[in-house]
Image (cartoon, rainbow, N blue to C red; front, side, top):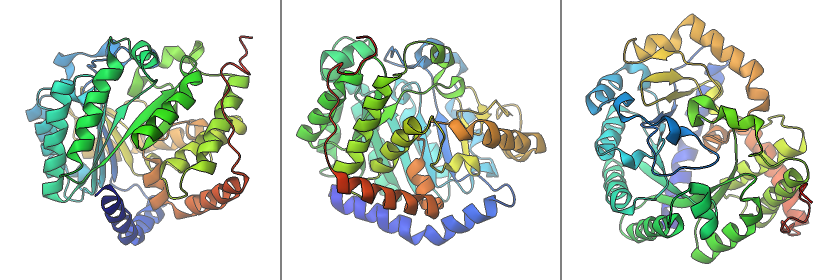
Length: 387
């Protein structure tokens, strides 16, 4: 079923390619309505991650209520949104997460794909909630995708998340989602965020995922106050540096060499390898430059994780906020000053569809890398600066 569903997704993407390319061309000449949305529905979280600080600012009283969400999404601003992601914090800490998802899906007339990021750390909540959302998406003909975060195998994951038994709890959610795939079509996998603490566990995470037959994407730690609340960590020792960076670059290149060419995660892994290798100069496209938007729990509206707040959708009209001249000037500022060094992989595969040329270049480079196809393992502390 999973392979059939993947083919359905690729077919849908191919059919929409002409429209996507037209939107990309149009966005170069004038502002267009967003087609990509990240909605962080809460900063409340069931984890205490070392590389993310959202849990420190989680405040249920500041989260928009279901009625407020319904009112906000009645705006014509969202009329062209095709890809929507629900994130946090941990979305399943909201008792009304299923209803929130239904409101969003029903309010977006052009939605094609809906995703949810989850820790999976509270299985008795996550499993029934994700099940209902997956079923609703299938009923509506919307592609559903979800990933459980796994930042280490066994005790390492427990330590990173600062939750006792975190690995076991996440695995319960993973097992339930895989079982659900037998009767409901949706995309499922796991994701790992790599930073200084778990860099030596990369190979263990990869081996575990392969053993379990799980699709996995590796992400590098990054810093953003609007999205992650962790800007203060940028000056600390969270990010791998020096020789550890090179070890990580080789690991990402190995993923490109060894994984299937059409694996969507390869594009992300190549992006990270490029960023490390060229001194953090971004070459990958990003849909948020021209057609993305981010909404925070309290109604704060942003262009992306590097954006300043445009205003609050609870007190101002969302569409007017987005198209306001000062807002569009701010987007130009982001593009000129933040985008050139931005590490974010958010919706990068969407950008590949909407901006074909960069993706073709990636395929050419990935083909060259595959010809090398020599595993470049990360030896435990072999090149660490701490030695």
